[in-house]
Length: 444
Ligand SMILES: *Cc1c(COP(=O)(O)O)cnc(C)c1O
Image 1: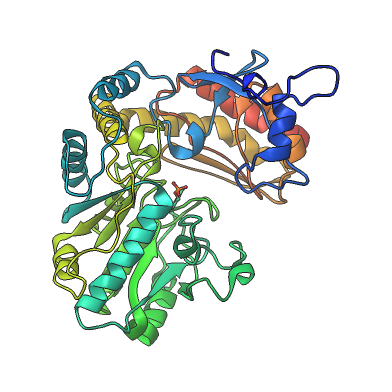
Image 2: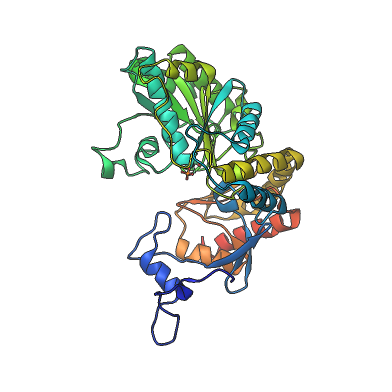
């Protein structure tokens, strides 16, 4: 490892047999990980480097990465083109403020986003993370309704089983039970929720499925600024794939009841579901769109909120005369430059062929899991493969069992799932899926 380790940082204790802390011990005692406990931290594997679809651990083992670092690393790690884009941008500037200034990386990124996202989304707010892009979308919806003289339309409607991020506003839109909203009651904005769609992506559409949405909108539309949903794929709230007709109905109902539609494509954007954006499965355009995660190919944090011209112009003519948001690192040139390169690479690589090939590999490779008594369902959409177990998995057994078999996945609850980098070969994919099935067979 060429970087200084914690033990080589002045003042940090040396890793010695005399009882001083190793890096791993230091980590356990001092560093939060996502959704982690400081009193009983889970297993942690030190990673030394990553290249292509492989994560190389400190102990030299190499793991095939099934997670793409949570939907992000679509081109794999350490990609020469993305490395070169970052290195080149560093020679110009890593960051400058975006207030009163602009630069080619931001302009080039906005051009690409406007051209590639569903029609009508022409105004781009470059945000610094997915959750922030959701906060921005919420504020846009509220400012929009306020500017139209409808300030009472200031709450949002979200789907049960949804996930929209971890900041307070975004969190208020996540599934209320699974998000433990009661812990934060009092400060969490109170939103409306409607039952999640029940008809699966490939199932026969049942018109009753959108009835709860119609009911809540007809009852409460005077109080609702926008409906927010993850189009087609509900990600961290359950890895559920629902019917495109639901999305078409949602679009129509929003129009009927004068409510904006916000599509959160932070997970699904840039090809993951088999379309460049999941809204395309239903051929609809939202009024506001959030993108993030894969936007930089997993290189650094960046997101964007796109709005229709009508939404943007209405906000701009409202009381504030501007949109009330502007983070310090807005439009970060380094991240924008890498995002442009990642998007170009996606198009050059013919992402559609890549994703179709992965879909076939996942269908084939995960099918044997259906034979296991412990498995409730196996489903695949685009480059997303899910094994749903009947019981929550024991992470203390399953994750080590996967690492032993040379793969990296990160199950939660009853869900053992993968969303591999698009560059994964058929052989690597076969190894990944076979190891997943073997690991749940022994420890699921
Ligand atoms: C990951 C995710 C977010 C939050 O993005 P962060 O970059 O983690 O803040 C929001 N919505 C969806 C659908 C996501 O998958």
